[in-house]
Length: 315
Image 1 (cartoon, one colour):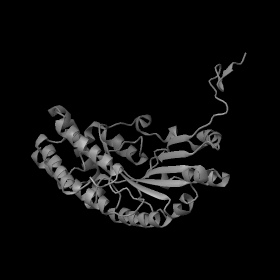
Image 2 (tube, rainbow, N blue to C red):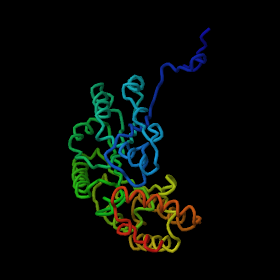
Image 3 (cartoon, one colour):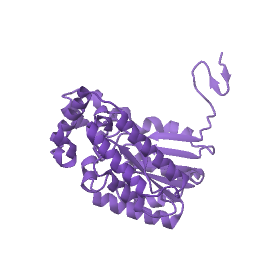
Image 4 (cartoon, rainbow, N blue to C red):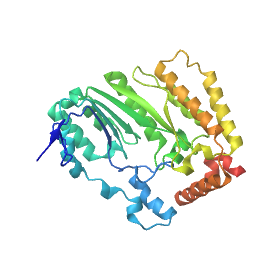
C-alpha cells in the first residue's frame, strides 16, 4: 500500500509537488584555470597535474568528469522550474564557459521564470562577459561574484594560466555595464592562502578603487583550511606577523567606519582571519609537507617559487 504524507512516498522516498525556492548548483568541474589552492573536484584542468605530482594512475581518484552529466540532471532541473523558484546560486568549475549552463539560463528565459529569479554566479571572469549581457538582463536581478586573489604577476602565479590584463579589462567592462543597467551587482571573492599573502594590499588597493553604486568594493574573504598545503597557517611564524602587520596598517589607514555595514562586515572577516593565521601553531612536519607540495607544483609548471614567495628564501 502506498503511503504518502506531506507529499512524500515513504515506500520509495519520492517527493511529489516539490516547491523549491532556492537552488545552489555546483555546475560541474569544467574550468579553464589551474588555481594554486584548487583541486580536481573544482577544476578538470588539474587532473593531469595531480596525477603526476601524486604519482597516481588511478583515474577515478582525480577525474570527476564521469560524475557530471547534464542529461542525467536535466529532468530534475525541469521539475524545480516552478513559479516558487526565486533564487539560484551557481558555482563551478567556471560557469561562463559551460554551454549547459547557458542552455539552462535560456530555458528559464523562454519559460518566463527568469523574471522572478535572483541569479548569482561565481566566475573567474577570464572570458569576455559580453555574450552573457543579453542573458543577465532577463533576470530579476544578477549578482556576479568575481573570484580574484591578487593582481599583476601574482595573479598569474596564483590563477595560472590566467592573464591579468584580460581579467582587468573584463572587470572594467562589467563595472561599466553594471553602472548602466542598475540591475547587475558585483562582488569580489578572495581566497586567502599561502600563495597570495605577498603584496596582498595591492589587491585591496585595486578592489577598493572600483566605483559604482552596485559594486561592493571590498572582497569577501575565505580562509584556506584545505587543501592543507595551501593554508596560510603553514607560513613561517615571523612572516605571518609581517603580513598581519602590513594588512592591519593598511586597514587602519583606510577609514571604513563610514562605509556600509556590508563593507564593515567584510573588513571584520579579514581581521578575524589575520588572527587565525597568526595564532595557529603549525608543526615543522606540517609546514615541510606544505612546502614540498608547493615545490612539486612549481617545478611542474616551471614557476620560480622564490620570485613569488620571497619568504621561501628563509626556509
